[in-house]
Image (cartoon, rainbow, N blue to C red; front, side, top):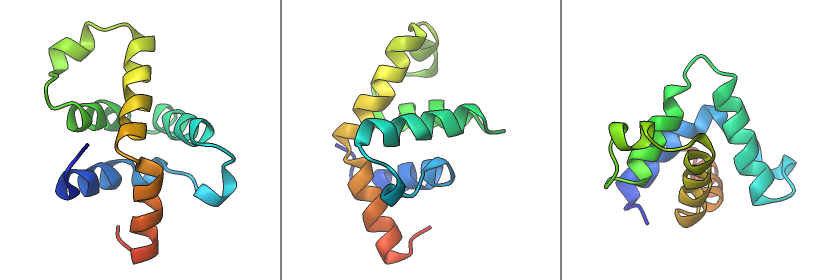
Amino acid sequence: MLNIRDALELYTKLEKFTPDYEDIDDSLEFTGTIISNIRQSDTPEAFGESLLLMYPDKDVKELSEMEGEYIVLLFVEGLAENKFLALVEFCRTLGYG
């Protein structure tokens, strides 16, 4: 799990791709919406940057050699492990970002 500094950095990287949590029925839909928003954006590097933040033991070369489906799975698991939905609620309640 990320420390608070890294968690806030993750939130900052993904904030503009994150839907209103009131509009989402479950965490998988929430995560899928984030991924979809990143893919449609002009800053798709946010996906890789977020992965590197959530998995500091991995590097760009290692991620680039992985299958696409596995990378998406890592992203989903990373958001779940780091309680990203709760982080979003926390940050928005505080007016952070």
